[in-house]
Length: 362
Ligand code: GDP
Image (cartoon, rainbow, N blue to C red; front, side, top):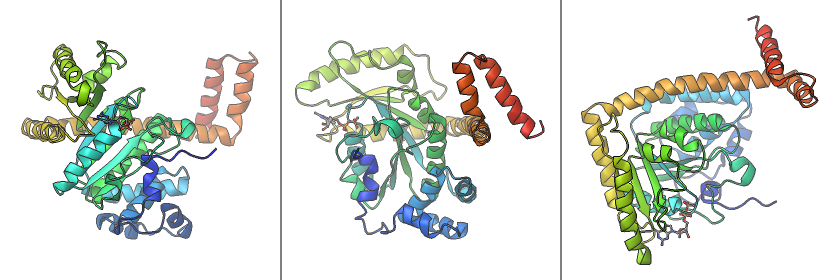
């Protein structure tokens, strides 16, 4: 089946900005099959070379162990040059207007001399073509801006794996000089929790409904939001949006105050008419000012770093175990036994894990 065209896939097709080298990331990997010069790649990243940045991200996304080794070396060298951006999570159900909003805010930021990277986490993309990805070209204005870099979600792996790759990609983008990073996800699964754990500020996009404003979106997501945006506040929808704003403000007041001391707010935007966009950015800069002053900004980043240490351990152990067990063809055998009722699932898991640990002499 022909793959859907989509915004977060745009990058490969739209290599028109002069800053973008014609070499695709894939060619880069092919050409350098034998020889990766980590220093050369890192230098390219520091110089803001988009083609080299893309290739390095491709290495991060690769599941080949030899690529992983190089990727780790690149990340290590980029780490001291990372951390200087504002990381913003953006979520909302499909159709709420995320890509239109990102384009509007992105163009606004580029106009203010910011350098913006737009990343995405969409673990469903491998199977479905991705709920985050529309069947049209998304962010077509932003994607040709030389100070904007749009990268689709890594398209394979577990949510944990995809999230780790995105977090590592943030590091590379920061080292390449991007001062603002958007991380987009669909507010329908678990991915927004992962995004929340890697950003400084979390934006939730909502629509004004017909009296059911608080339905369809989990309470937990509302609680994570630093700003709730009611998008499509235009035309006949404007009055409904104003009412929804009051309802959401009341709902947000019910949540316990955050350690950041920031009081989440509700803003109205029309991504299509380009209204309310500056106010969203003002909220983000106010938040940054407040939390830098009261040290929550740094505290939050430290907590996130701790969380990611554990996540990385969990992910590595898991993938290492499956690699080991798959190499020995054990997983399939035990799956069959469990299906046939020859062994119970807990016993099967125990045997598999014991075999794995024994393999390492544990
Ligand atoms: P996403 O799935 O969340 O990325 O949503 P899109 O950005 O693709 O938008 C879904 C549809 O809503 C598109 O047809 C947009 O043109 C439309 N849309 C997005 N933002 C607005 C807005 O502010 N006002 C109106 N009226 N339509 C909008």
